[in-house]
Length: 231
Image (cartoon, rainbow, N blue to C red; front, side, top):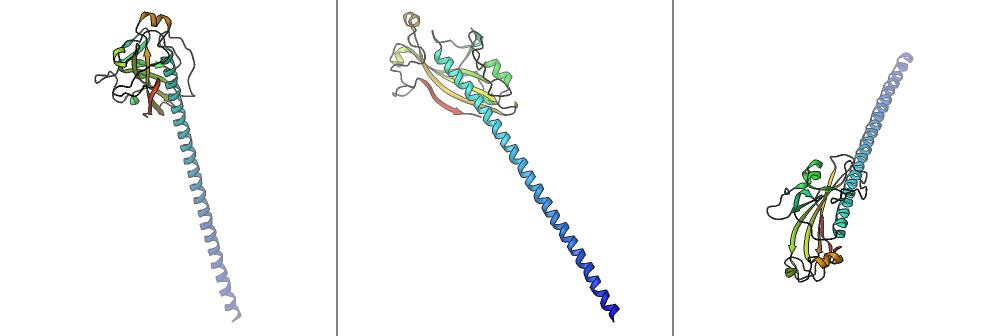
């Protein structure tokens, strides 16, 4: 009687020991899964943060190139440059019209195409002299392209200067060539049309006295007229 009574508790204890072991294993497995999930989430957040930083680096590079090109154009003196695709006197100026030489989506062209059709930011196109080093810690040097959209003759604009609206495209990259940002702006400025004005330096640096926007009676903005991010 006593012998039988001793056997039952021992079996119960063995079963309880097995359940405790199983529960411990399940608990450890749950902790492992939670740890893996947290680790994966941390890696994903790190990659997203790195991609965001690289995209911002590319955007800053493109904006720097755009600002540099605008400043260079507005500070240029003399007569208005003519259209030229073969770097006449160093500057490649595209004609903006229905028959424009530029593709409809230049943002998808590679850096080689941009360098052929445009200029590296920081380098004076006319002299080839590097005036400033602009990188923004990007993989490739930022590049810009210029296109003349509209020209208003003195009689049309109502003043003695020639009014020209330009489109400037700028491209920047992140730390890899795969992260690209492209921005564009429309810049308006005046050019002297008489030899006396050219010699005296009048009508330069974006001065637009009495000019009007195409199709509008509102005064034109001297300098940046419009801006947008393309890519």
